[in-house]
Amino acid sequence: MATIANVTQTLVWLGFRGGPVAEEVWALGVLALGVVIAARVVMRHRDMAYAAVIAWAYAGIAVNQRDTPVVVAVALVGAATVVLLALTSRFRPGRGRPSVPAAAN
Image 1 (tube, rainbow, N blue to C red):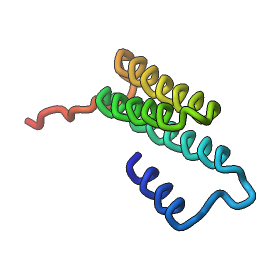
Image 2 (image 1 turned 90 degrees about the horizontal axis):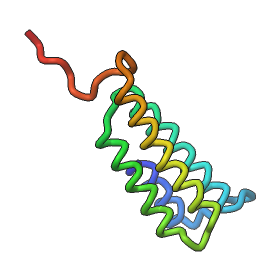
Image 3 (image 1 turned 180 degrees about the horizontal axis):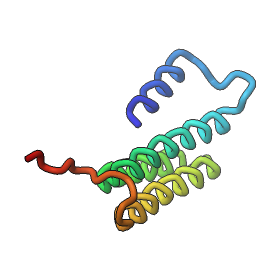
Image 4 (image 1 turned 60 degrees about the horizontal axis):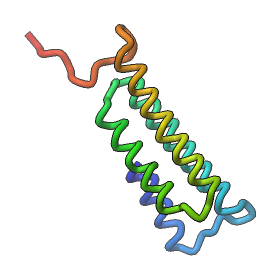
């Protein structure tokens, strides 16, 4: 998530405003990319702490972008999606890998 945020911030600093695509559309794409990456990590490692960090970040985006309703909605849906995936993967036996490796003998 930090990499996505840093790249986005760098593009803004460089003056990139989305070219022919509206800034909101870029924001939605970046948020969707973040959810896809987070979903893969959460489902693979069943890591509740990681899901909580992503949900917190997306909630912060929703608060920070409160003047752009579509971004707020997508950020909140993204946060909820990651949390729900974490909960369902955490309590499904045999799905994914545990977040803590087994002790070596």
